[in-house]
Amino acid sequence: MIVVTGGAGFIGSNLVAALEARGADALVVCDHQGADDKARNIAKRKLADVIAPDALAAFLDANRDAVSTVFHMGAISSTTETDADRIMNVNFGQSVALWRWCAAHGKRLIYASSAATYGDGSAGFDDDGSPAALARLRPLNLYGWSKHLFDRWAARVVADDGARPSQWAGLKFFNVYGPNEYHKGAQRSVVVQAWETAKRGAPVRLFRSHHPDYADGGQLRDFVSVDDCVALMLWLHDNPDICGLFNMGTGQARSFADLAAAVFAALGREPDVEYVDTPPDIRDKYQYFTQAEMARARAAGYTAPFRGLEDGVADYVQRYLEREDPYR
View 1 (tube, rainbow, N blue to C red):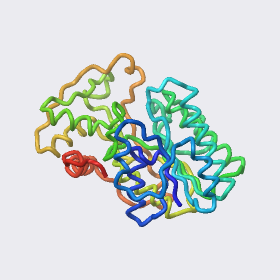
View 2: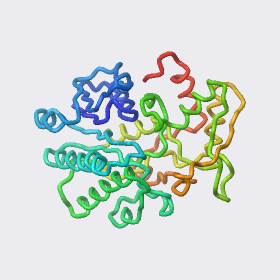
View 3: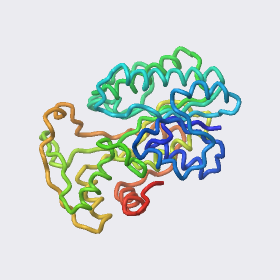
């Protein structure tokens, strides 16, 4: 039995679909369904059970012999969340509880960290998981801090030879795009937001640069397809001896202008972009460059290529966004 927390969410539901395609017949999703479209993300899946987060502890105890792996994708992922108690309880406290349960029962834990842990990037984007290296990072928001707090907690446990899951791995996801992100509102990728704007016949708006080293629209991000994220998680599942903290990007930063051009190209149209000022309330925290260093995953044995931006965007637009049913 494989349990996927956050399994009705964006990355989680894509993982569930891939596990099902591989023949997994005992998949359990743990998530809040709410009143939005999250339920449609798993409507096509064959699931053994769907449970609410507050029922997870009891479910795990009742099924401890059957459960082999927990993929912990569940979190409050909003970068604008301001309730520190809530976000720390969910993103840190529940992660600690899952780690301890998996450690106590010899289970495997693969969990979602975030590139938000790198803050403004001034300390680089090296996924060195040692306590000393992690101590140098300074996230810019509560979400980033909550993920970073758990990374640091896990690193100390490992460094002190404490109790740990039979396999543990954390993934620092960069700028992920792909199907089943539609419920995320303002947190959806720029790909789907640009597509919506272009379909209306309006120009896609990008931020002007307020940095002398970057042109308007030249701000750089490591945009990564959710398919690549799922592929690396499946590889970890296939290699239970591999543990550690790993970046999950492509290792190749691209500009927002490149991304907008890729969306228009997927629609068979010339780019139509206008630039607006970066809002003052986020301007001093705005990142102009993110790029995952992928050497550690490669050194661990991961050899699959990462999808290029133009190919990934074209696939997303044409196979999902342009279809009547855009869900995986």
